[in-house]
View 1: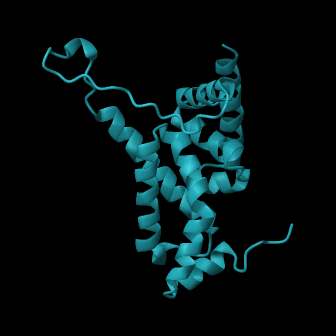
View 2: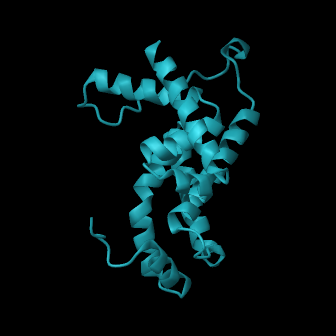
View 3: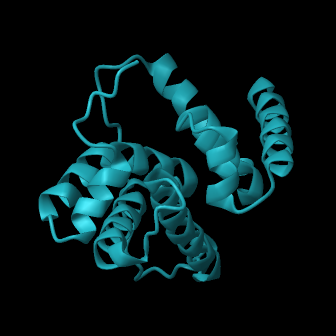
Length: 188
């Protein structure tokens, strides 16, 4: 398949590092949707995913000179997004959660917003997507990351190994175990 872009990601990054901000815009265009999907699958919250995406894009902009062409641009970008996602998950675990039983009579009752993104889609499809997302969230993060990168983002095992900084065999093993856990969870 011929490359549909005039420049490779690495050429764009070199242009951006030399001061061409249009190259940055092209990088954002190429990666924004894929990153949003990756981050959302990781953190399971649209607003948080949008925040993490913005943090990722800002870091790409401000740290462009840290990129060295020894790695693919995609590897570098996904590493940044993955690190921000993991940080947000750690923060979320530390936050105090108010239990309903501890709410007093003066506490406000909030309506849970309907976040249905495509109302014309069938209930069955929405249920399936939600069930898959819930199953992904039930995985430990060391299994969740590689299976999202492989099965949703469709990255190579080699790229995933570089992004996660673990040996290739470990990546394959974690993806296999994650798939087995997902299969088991989705059968329930």
